[in-house]
Amino acid sequence: MPELPEVETIRAELASTIVGLRVLNVDVRRAGVIRGRRDSAALFEGLTLATPRRHGKQLALLGEGAAGSEPRAMVVHLGMSGQLLRLGPEEAPVRSDHIHVRWELVDARGRGAGSVIFRDPRRFGGIWTYDSFEQLYEARWSGLGPDAAGEDLTPRLLEYRRSVRSVKATMLDQQVMAGVGNIYADEALFEAGIRPQRSMRRLKPTEMGRLAASIRAVLERAITARGSTLRDYRTSGGESGGFQMQHQVYGRGGLACRRCGKALRSGVVGQRSTVWCPLCQR
DNA sequence: AGGATAGCCTGCGGGC
DNA sequence: TGCCCGCAGGCTATCC
Image (cartoon, rainbow, N blue to C red; front, top):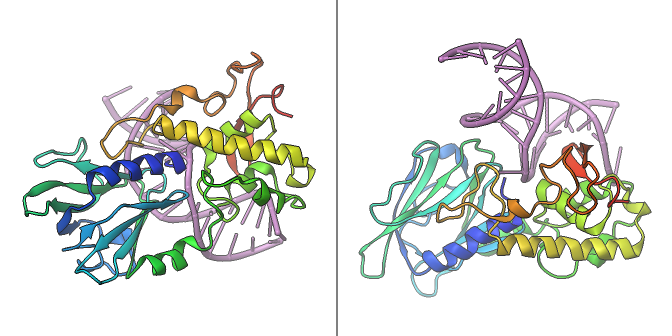
């Protein structure tokens, strides 16, 4: 479900709604979603929340203890159907099923400040706990490619110019670049005018540059629209994203291309359902 | 190396 | 109304 724009939307919201609050207690309802230590200290009980970080589709929460001690860290990966929801005091979640973890928060004076819940019906997501951000980075992030919304990806794509893989499979490989999923791969390929099936070794350098620019542009527009809601995705405030209104190809197989009017084609590329325009994409 | 496949889960929409 | 089937935004393991 959530790709980079959705996770970034949640991260930015949490940055403005949880930083400085303290975790009063943690309620684990389904321990299986937590990998690594799952005791209350590892899950931030008593710690004060710092600004969350993100790399690709992964979100890192940081918890600070006594002054001078290193912050603890955990990765929240939302998988296909995961949600991190911020609830105010007394606020009940829209749905109470599939809630696996709940952090109850208090402000600096100890007054109730609501909670954050991790909800994930399909349970493809999970939580990984670490003693420090450095440990988290080594275990989970150091093997990922550069964040797809960060610097210019052209040099990274050029590293794969002899690869026989399809350009779409390459974009979805989180070791190549982190954050692109099925929706934004199709949208960026449409914007760049490149067919998803094309082998990397047959892309011209100018096409690689165009693709890099399109990936970043599509992701930035999607972040501005607060992500794409198809079914499960909600911001931490429980709201839907808006970028699905701007999708050019994803979910539109058989419909008319918004640019040229030709029927969009669909098929399987890199084991994922894929939609492209036979006229606009070469 | 990278393809294909299966598996991890639940929910939903379509066809009957 | 209900049942069965296929499919879904992610990722990993295994085999070839």
